Image (cartoon, rainbow, N blue to C red):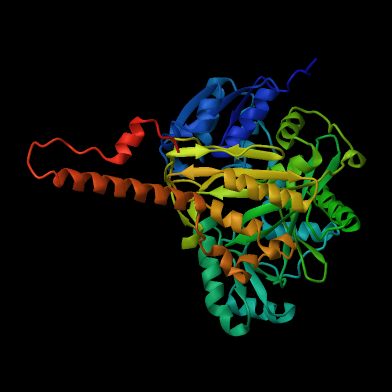
Length: 506
C-alpha cells in the first residue's frame, strides 16, 4: 500500500523539461499538479501534462516566470499547498522562498537563510573557510583596479575576476598579468552590475586545466545529511555545461569519500535542507577547492539518479513535507556509469548561436539504459525568450565505455527536424579519443576545436539523393511532354509514374 503523499497539490513554478520532470514525479506520488505558463508557452508540454494550468503573463520571464506575486496568486487560487521551483528562474531566489513561507505555501527547496548564505560568493567562501572546507586562494571584495592588482600580486597570476552576486560565467574574466587588470576589472564589474544589479567583484587564483567536479547532497530538517558521489561537468562552453557524467573517470573511492565529506560539511555549515550541489574545481595536482553551492536541483541530476537508484525530485518533495531521509550514507551504493547530453536549440557550427523555430517532426530515442527528459514535441514552436535547452538525453552503462557507446547510439536515433540542434556536436564528442580516454578539463572545447566542425550526416545525404532523383524524373517527364510535337497530343507517361502505379516500394 502506497504511503499517503505529503501534499495533495503542488504548483510547478517553471517550464520546459524540468517542469515536465517535476509533474511526472508528483503524479507518481499521487499528487495533483498545477502548471503556470506565459503567453509563449500556451501549447507547452508541461501545460498539457499538469491537471491545472494558469496564464501568468507575457513571454518575457520578467513579466511571467519571475513574477512572485502572480505565482503566489495562482497558488492561492488553485489551492496548491507547495511550490517546486525547478531550476533557473526563481529557484535560488531567497525572496521567493520567504514569500512562499509568509503566504503559508511550502517552498520545496532550502530555507531562504541557506540560500542567502551560499548565494553570496564572498560570504560563502568565508563560511566554508570557517567550516574547514578548502577554498581557492582569493581576495575580499575589491574597491578598484588598483586594489585588484595588489591582491593579484599577492595571490600570484593568473587570477580570475568573479562577480560576487552571480554565476553562469557572468562578470567573470581571466587576468594573465598586471597590464590586463584595469580593462578586465572594468569589464567584469560592468557585466556584474548589468547582470545582477551588484557590481561587487573579487579575485580567485586561476586553477590551470581544472576539472569541474560537483557533489550531490540531500539533507532533511531532522539533522541528517548524505552525499551521492560526484559528477564530472568539465565539458563546457562560456562556463555553461554541455555534457555531464557520474562518476568522474578520475575520482577513486578515497577521493570520493573525502570530497563527499567536504560537501556535507558545507551543507551543515549553512543549515541546508533539501537537495543541493557543492561545486568544486580539481587541479592537475589532484587538489580540490570549493567553488560554490547551488541551492537547488541541478540540470544534470539524472546521471546521479541512474547511478544511485534515487529519485531526487521525490526526495525533495518528501523532505519538504517533513519526512526524514529514507537511507543512510552506508546505504548509498553506486552502480555503473551514466552520461548526460544537453540537447540545445543552438547551432554548434556557428558558435552555438540560438536557433529557435518550429519543430516539424521529432523522433525520440529509446532502448536499454536510455532516458529521455524532454519538454518538446513535433509541432511545438521553440520560443526565443528562454533557455535553448530542448531535452536531456541520458545513457547508463555497466561501465563508462558502454555508457558512451549507448549514448552515441541514442544520439543517432534522436531526430529533431525544423531547428538546428547540438545533436551532431554531442555525437562527435562521444567518439572523440580524448573524451573516451577521460582526458577532460574546462578548456576541453578550446583544446579540440575539431569538435565544432560539421560532419556530413548520412541521413541528410540520403534525403538529398532522393530529392535529386525525384527532380530528375520530373525533368524527364516535362521534356517528354514538350517533345510530343503538338499541342493537345497525348501526354507522355514516365517510367517513374508507371512504376509508382505498379506499386514500387523503396
